[in-house]
Amino acid sequence: MSELKEKPIILVTNDDGLNAKGIKALVAMVKDFGDIYVVAPNRTNSGKSNSITVEIPIRIKKVRDEENLHIYSCKGTPVDCVKLALNKILPRVPDFLVSGINHGANTSVSVLYSGTMGAAIEGCINGIPSIGFSLNVFDADADFTQSVKYGRKIFANLLQNGIAAGVCLNVNFPKDEIKGIRVCRQAAGRWNEEFDHRQDPFGGDYYWLTGHFKNAEPHNEETDEWAIKNGYASVVPTQIDMTAHDLLENLKKWNYEVQD
Image (cartoon, rainbow, N blue to C red; front, side):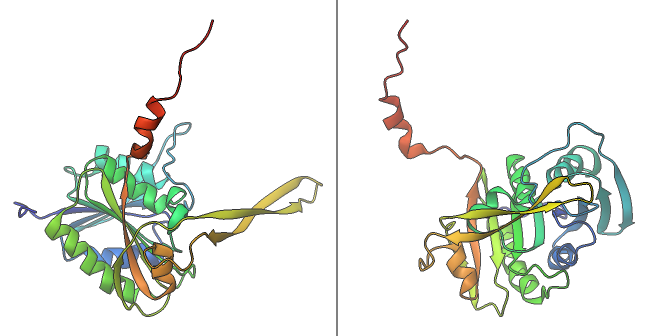
């Protein structure tokens, strides 16, 4: 990657909200690499994926503004934060985007639901080298020390080497001591949803979403699920293009003639 002529601008966001410990750790991870702009939701937006706000106005407030660190709170989704940052806040297109560090893993199909990765993918769509970071611990007071240490190395590699257009990185850290970094593929699996049925004081039904993840290949050492379960940070290159290219020629052979 060619050397940047000016100090890099790094856009930082998340889906756990501006006050989450994970985003503070993420700022600490990248603060020595450039001029930091934090634009994050004012509250948790977990599971929002690539959702955007279209029916109500989005409000944004400057929280802090000092040399090399500019923080904004946004009443919107993670993708709203990225879109507003690019269109209304940043002085120019950022050189990098980092999202997280999420409280909880975003491996396997969770990448499709994740607001953390939704923000990273939005950066990728806009041609910005982007990474989503997650830690396999849901505790609000989780220890991000190891995540920052290894995440800084991954980010330094992105800064030095760049990444192909249309691709971002999905990085997950294990809950315990990190043994190293493994480049992986997304594990096959699915969430088995369950709904906890309850009633309000007026007899109205409501439901809490629960469930558990079912790993379809728990022993496959090539996957992100295996990596974080065995003490490694996983790095999965994730692409915007969801086309099943291997099927294109086969589908063209189907009979599409419609009879009157």
